[in-house]
Length: 620
Image 1 (cartoon, rainbow, N blue to C red):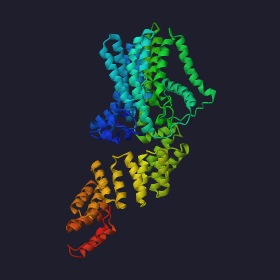
Image 2: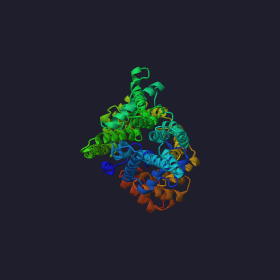
Image 3: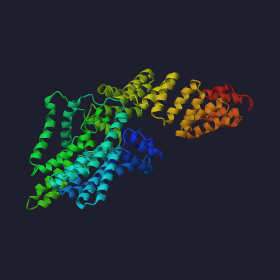
Image 4: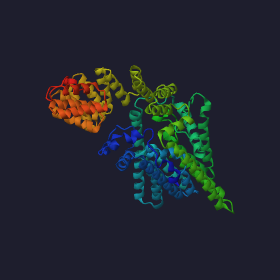
């Protein structure tokens, strides 16, 4: 059922920040990236188990997105099956219906259809298995199952720390089974609390120093956040029970902490829990477990801790992935018990009602999955549901820019900045578009604004440095490119451009070192090879120069400057016929190229071994 409901994503592509997690993640793509995945602090989040799985998948699928999508769907299906077994052990009626509804619930599409969210589906697999192993430990008394449960929980935390509230769930389960908490329950939970706290603190550190890195996420105070938490609980519950009008990025709420009415939703949450507690020995027991579980699993995303995405929205469908089973299980149990009271036809009614719900949810999931096929479809759908979404406006603009519709892209970027003035990515993209139109100073102004908002924005720093280099402001360019290199030392293109800036400043040896580093990091970097060859040519190293130029044109056959430089080097070497062939290649690529035309004219008007004119005209 799960694979059928998610059929539209079987051949879907990469989305939004899949580049950060996968397609441009050097740790995932490097054969020796695993140690850095586990022991470095360079990634935006510390989810090493997730990154390890992606590392393994990259060996299998490479840049083919279908494999990653199918693995996500499989993990989700396995998680649903594990929940079925967990609910059975807890003797909750309608366990199969609850698991089936969870498997095809439309709210989960974001977690399953987005490759990056394998951190959700993988963590869920370990999380549900933890509960199953722990229940088996309780039922059998075998300590090895306790060890298995703890190990699975740690792996879940290393996949995504959203499962950190699990120790509270263990206490809730103990209360559900025995209607009280015993000292042994508290002692058993201590290692789980310790692991949860340790990795939660690590995640907070990564969010603050890497994902956020100085950007302003929220300016509201504690009281506003407390009030908004109540709003979020009811919002998530409404989408869990009636999954319609789902949006990839919901409008961002403005909740006043000074308005007493803002706390009404939170008061209702507390009151509902209190009523369930009051009647915990009868009908309130199931409600207390379900709602208590729901709120506990939402704690990491209710806004008390800054998450980078919260600058755009305070809620997201994927954030209730772990909490969702609570209300779904309660609804399934209620349906099963209520319809089971019919003496005649009760079983048929249960089957019919379950089938209608599963088919309805599955159909909604299939329809929503189609929106995740490609980025353009997703962002246009997001704008339809949230017309003032700055992120969607920015990314629609990026799509327009890539298709050559620069003026339309600029309009979208400007709209995004009118909604969210301190949106560094929109400033960066607007800078790129203005640079494309030749408005260099305006472009650099937006690059600088992006860096003021987010000082570690390496792309903006690189573009600013490269633009300064093109303007001949080599000293400023060198400073900016050095900043970019410090932030991302593995970028071959930064080494290449920094080397060119150093070369123009007369720092030849340093330039050579950076050209060599660029080539070591990216052997097929044609520009770096051409530039290194040019330096060798000027220093008399003809053989080295020829080797580098030849490699450059093999990598990029239409690289005019490399062909021109190769021709010059071959001529100096005395290989006139080969030089003529290269000049002729230049003219094939650019029929009116003045320098190649002049060179050939000079060669044809003199003897083959005559010295060429303007020998020093080869350029990097």
